[in-house]
Amino acid sequence: MTDTRHVPKPDWVSQVDTAPAFDLDADALLRAGEFPLTIVQDHLADLGADGGGVLRSSFDPSPLIRALERGGYDCWTSEDCTGKTILRVRRAAADEGGIRPSETLDSDEGERFWLEGEELHMDVRQMPPPMPMIAILEFLDSGAHEGAVFVHTPHFPVHLLPELEERHVQWQLVTDQPNESILRLTRDTLS
Image (cartoon, rainbow, N blue to C red; front, side, top):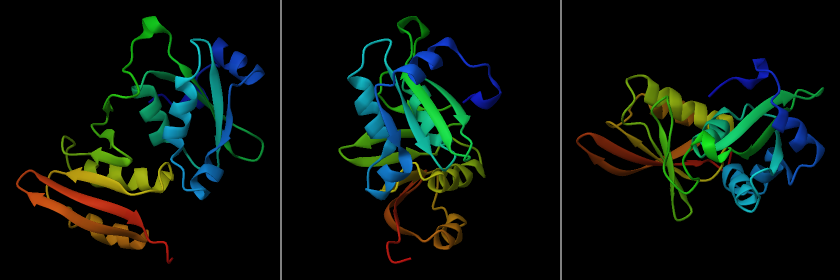
C-alpha cells in the first residue's frame, strides 16, 4: 500500500469530495458491530465506474486500505483538522486491473483475507517470522474489524498469546496440524 499522505492528490479525489456516493464513519460502524470493509464494499458494488465515497476514522485504516486496494479499488487518504483520517475510495478504472472484491485478497506483505459466510479469515502462513505475529497484531490494533477473525498461522503461535491477552482478545484453538494452526480470535467484551 502506498502512503497516500505523501502522494499528490489524484483528479478523481476532487470528484469524490464534490459528490460522494457515501460518507461513512468507521468508528460509528465499529461501535454498531459492523465491519467497515464489508459496508464500504457493499456501497461500492452499487456504484458506476466514476462513483466513489468517503470513510472517516480516528484510527489508521491501513489494513482496510490494503484490502480495498487488493480488491480493485483506488484509495487516497488525508487528515482533517481534528486528526481524523479521511479515506476516499472508488472502483479502479477497468484498464488498471485488480481483483474483484468477492475474491481472496492477497497482499504484498503476504497475508490473505477472505470471508466464509460472515466469518473473516486471515492467513499469514506464507510470511517469514516474525511477520505473522506482527501482521495479526497490526490488524487487531487497527480496529478495522471488531468481530471474530480466524487466523491461519504456520504453527501454534505461542508468542502471540501474551500479546492477545494484553489486548483483551480471547483465543480458541480451532485446529493444530503440521504447517497450520487456526485460532478464532474475539474481543473480550468484559474489558
